[in-house]
Length: 455
Image (cartoon, rainbow, N blue to C red):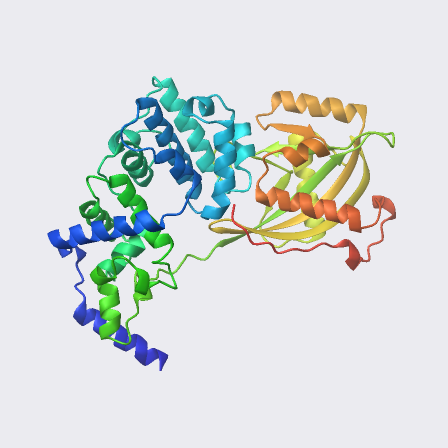
């Protein structure tokens, strides 16, 4: 039955729907009706969000107020990429409390920005915000006011430029995000691949036709709001939709049983994530006395690539699944080469325990981490060697205590490792000297978790 339904749906789409969306356009009366209906709906149903309070001050405001709006829109739109609204609200409020203007942000360090951003994921967004703010301030401090000028700023693309220009400066330019794509493909019953470059170009063309020249910012927010609420991915509220009378997808679904509104936009298969494996060593340095404070070794990632410039525990990428001996050999080699820490010569291994495994999912990577807790007591020679290595190495690292570790802007993946180690210390046995540790595995010492969140 399912196969028959799919074949019937495909047949109907082939006969009812035009294939070339270049021929698609909204007609004059249709445009006016969509604008009026959508803006009326938005005025009555818009969500009360903190960035809207800042950006909703009317048109008769000074330059300083408009630039404040633009900055608020910029920060919120970047945060909202790949992140839920409810999650963003607290981050936005904290961010604006610390850096209320673009000039305040431009003076921040990347460490401060990453600390504020910790947990939001996609950390390159935070770096681009900082670099963009510095670029604007260094260029004279005047916020660009048109979409074309905004696209010249580091990290601002076509969508973000359109949002800032229309909401803060009333430029009649469109925005196209996932919500807008969903609304427009349903309005016009577009069955083409929404990821295809030609399809995207045509959706921008259609969005440009719809923008209200008198209220461009409100209209863009309205169409995004519609896609985020009433015109949802799986459960659209067509009965309450303000533009249901103009929706071709809804019209087709009423005429043909095998067609559904949720058939639009076309579902595109996601690429399977790459499977990576790494050995993570939480290196804890302890002193000789029982009262001495522990310190943890953190390494700064390269300035380019995944999680650029962020701090993490020493880790080594593995070729694939690896046994305990292979993982320890890889970690020992990394510690010796990078820091001059020789677990057989320059330090005393107080304990070395397997904490467990943790799976962390990035956008296109599924990373399985094997985590160990390595407690070391460095000799005087080991400390000297470590300092010499730091002077000559391009890699940056530092020691932090428990308090500093808890306040650093660490990624959610590194936070998972911290949580596992903390739980291991609380629930597991006291430190077991390596030499006397039995080879037989104790199941109570293993902490396994499969926490799937994006970074």
